Each structure stands twice: as structure tokens, then as C-alpha cells.
Image (cartoon, one colour):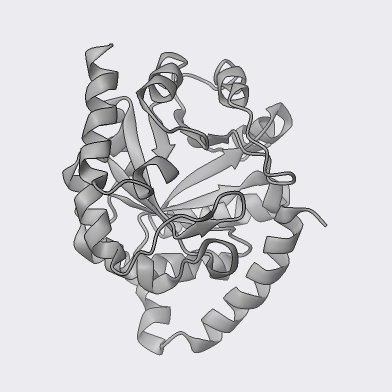
Length: 262
């Protein structure tokens, strides 16, 4: 069984449990159409915009940080110049949860991405009710009909959908389903290996009008600059910020170095 197959099995079970536990007021929240913040606008305004990621651990790197207050960390990252915050809400492999998303959304004014392994429309509604501005949709985790359904729901809930791909076939699927925000993940979700050429290769196949986000393996200015030169509007950075004692300075240092070399 691959990592992706394993995490999806658990996520389906966990999300069904979370939905049963959801309070009636929370269940109604997605239909109230709260004011969302635009991830697309945030990263395009800075080109490249940094999406700073909050996660406690990962299957590939193990424990990353003991995050007692994700809201405070998010505020620090935003103060350092992060255009948006990504929050892992998957608990078994990444140590996340819905409370993390709630606290981050309340603590910052920048867009908040719910980074999860979305498995259903109900899962999207849960993310919306918890305060997400955008959600990650992984092409490899959803059938084409399911992807179309959750993308339609995202539009109804005024959520931006970051549609993640790993190869040309998945990119074709994402574009055929109408994706306007594409994330290219350098990490193979079957083996967890990272190939930084994935994003560079697929950049040439993404239409110019589509907003592009590069994911996984970005630790400093050199990698971020390379992604920007390839045409990416935003870059997701996680581990490099979580392993430092001064995350705000780390964000500023990377962004300043990218700007100075432009």
C-alpha cells in the first residue's frame, strides 16, 4: 500500500467521525458565505508570494516542531512577509487538526489554506465551516467526477481550490475540470521522494492565465527564485521555517534575497 492509499483510508474514517461530531451551528456555517480572502490575489500581488506552512511533523521528516499555539506562529510568519498560511489539518501523519485551522484563521489577515487530503464534498464543507479561505484538492486522490463535484462546491462556498498535480496527465485532468489555481508538488505521494525538476518541467505546460504554486523541497531563496523564474506565482515553504528559532526572520531573509536578485 502506498502512502497516499494509506492516508486516504484513514482520512475517510476520520472525516466521517468529525462530521458526526460537528455542532449544528458549525454545520450551517458554510452556507452563510463568510468573507473569504483570496489566495490567488495574495500570491500574485507579490510574485513570488510565499505560502508559509504550519505542520508539526511529516512522514518523510518526522517531528518538525512542537507548536503549542499555531495562531501565534501564523501571526509571526505573516509579520515576516508570508502572503498566506497553509495549515495541515490531517492528524495521523502530520499532527494537525481543525482547531489549528480555527486558531490560525482568527490570528491573521492573510488567506488561510486548508491543506488536507480532501476525500468528499462533506470534507470541503467541514473545511469551510472551520474557516478556510482555500482548500487543497489532490488530483491523485479524487476521481475526475469527484474532482468536478468538489470544485463546483468550492465555487458555491466561495473557496478557492488549489488543485495539486504531479505529472502531465494529472495536469490535463485539472485543466479539463476548470482549475484556475494549480499546485505542482515535487513530492511523489506514493514513494515520498522529492524531485525538484517536477515543478520546473510542468511549468511549461500550464496556461499563462492559470495561477501557479510550487510545492515541496523549497528551503531557501535559491529554490524559490528558480521557481519564480520558471513562472510560479507562489511557493509553499514549510520545514525551513519550522526548524528555526526565528520564523519571521527566516521568511524575511528568503523574500529579501529573492527580491534583491530579481
